Image 1 (cartoon, rainbow, N blue to C red):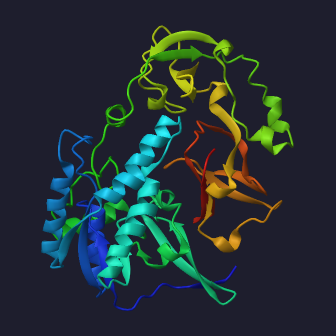
Image 2 (cartoon, rainbow, N blue to C red; image 1 turned 90 degrees about the vertical axis):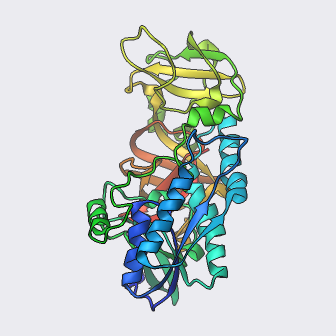
Image 3 (cartoon, rainbow, N blue to C red; image 1 turned 180 degrees about the vertical axis):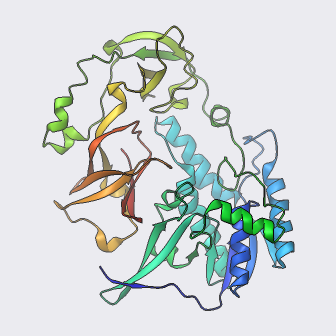
Length: 401
């Protein structure tokens, strides 16, 4: 390990991504209190009338709240229109992934492609030294072999840690990023907002796409991906497909392979409106009655437009012992820790936001990374980002094949 260096910044020019929420509001306040020159900037990421995000226009309200916060703090404020880049890099990607039967995470891509790329470049054009966001994560740095290496650490609030959403950022992006509230708990953030009288102090957290607003995903997808009737096939828990002796295999390809279903493996129990609307582990929207327990999606096949389901959240079809990340889809925030071919390393893994970290071993092979969990993990879906941590530090991530 290198020598840990404390982060003490000179008085800098910082552009804060003001979302209209309490977190970014307090982030801007804290930076100003530290003596930095702060500019508030709201990202307008959506105004495509051909695809409706919501019946409401939440971004307008958010923009107004961001402007009120900037006025209250006495900092300059402006709006930047990133909607073209957002559509090309995030929304079009979402539609393509769902159409291919994969489960994308637009918030991860939004951070990599919008906040810390397009937005960052716009801030640099204003002469900024850094950009700051209201993420609950932290940044540190070490000196190693004469080089400065930036670290992405989990936020201090275990209930709000958002480091996973930044699992695709690079060293160059981290170098220019600040996370002012990463050392705080959410109640502390709200208390600060109340103390200084911010209009966003009691505002609810956004549940929608980043910097866009509320979105009901099924309705959103149906505007671009047309409904298409197909069969729902139930796979019994005792199916011969679930030979868990494979989990003892030393063959990484076998350990990390997903089960391939065929229509003959089960029986038809219902009908759906499009396999591309569903994801592994999903329970809602299946509309299958008369079962002793809830039904869960085990797999989707967008080629045959078929959904495979199993009864109960304990169904063996929901469990995976491993997963595979193609070489070109692996990303290391810490490039100094990249595994060489045939190397292995133990890390803590998560495959979705707020999932508890679980121990696993990464095995590097010429074709990519094989990730083998110590114990089976539920609802692993293609297209998700698997992120690996060393304690509090996020080391890297990759797209699950």
